[in-house]
Image (cartoon, rainbow, N blue to C red):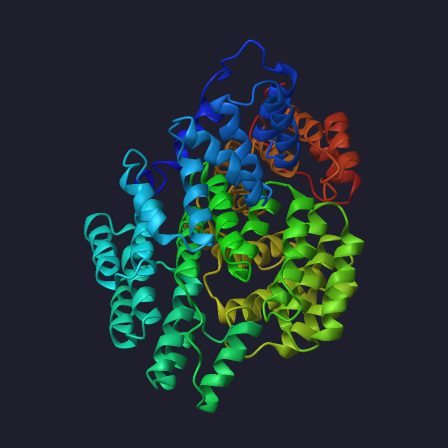
Length: 575
């Protein structure tokens, strides 16, 4: 119900594209351009979609579905100014279009036409969702009525209170007019009640607390939500608070910025939602937020991340570049750009970006951590260890990222064959986070592979499985340690479950083949080994294909004899 209210109007257009057949109404339309645009849209290639829909519109300039699609594609690539006249054409033709309505409202907000927003929505009651209601509430403030504005926020909060968004925006509106006491009361109450307004909500609150001369309380709120893991932006704000100076309230400095915050709030909520179309909604709302407020770095970063997830790498890279070097979030943007470059198979360029950051910001552990990740992904484990060493040196004890740095450095040591250092890092990680499933599994499995501490490994892996029972790789570890302990019937049970969870993983299929052999299920063992080989690809560097082929040719016992290991005791013979 909640999410349906959120996207009540915007979904109208999206359903047309993702659930309907051919929406074209005119036989004269350029179907080639239309079909190419539709295909590009479904593949998230928004630049191509805008191009092809533009071609189709030259043939049929008044086709409503084409016009809506063009608006959507232009928004997705950030060309809101080009989308506005098309949205207005749709409205002039009497089309009911949620996406066009939002673009028109945003355009009015951009030029300060707040009375026009109120008039527009008064005559457009068929398209009303959370976005429109919040925009109207802010527009009342812009048109000169604070009371109507606050009443509108209250009505939305009382009826739907979607993730506390109505109260959050009421708090921002109160702060904008200088009523910091009431603003703080609202944000404090909702945060205590579990309001999910994220990082920006916390920042708004600490700015409000500082305006009330409550810097100590602001620092406590920062610690409550972020621990010791302050990025550059938060570190700068914390330094001001500690100095006794007052943080400016610049979270929202105008009604236009308030409406931009509406779009960002909805973008952030959709980004957290587990829905197939959530990234699309987040992208549209994020683009509108950044267009209304070009300095809204959080909106820029969110849009870039979404484009990266959609594998629109060039658009993502261009979006990250919108964050100016003067911004304290420039480091975050550059780390995101490096990640995108790496995803686009440009790892050398990604490493270059991070190395330049290190020159300018030599004491930020997050940059070293990101660089270490690139080296580790590229299997340059020696460089990864060196970079992780520096990251750990710079990380405050007790920081939320501390355990992770020890863990990934341990992985790098393990890959280099430096087991003593690796085990030390893994155990240090578990001292910090004793029940972290990934660490329990990695250390336990590593000990199984080395044939050491098998009982301890079993305990660790069982704890990991209890935490993540649907992880095929962790369930595989449990089956494998049971196999190594000679408990073959139990091993088969868990390895079969692991194959169900990860049916195309060559290592898991290979393990199941060994367990079948140990149980005397020879034909099934050979079948699993062949399956394992069939799933090997360029990412299967850890799979010893020749060894699997040898097992198929001569059997596991004979192979173990060749390797100088004792043969298994088979429970039966189905030859």
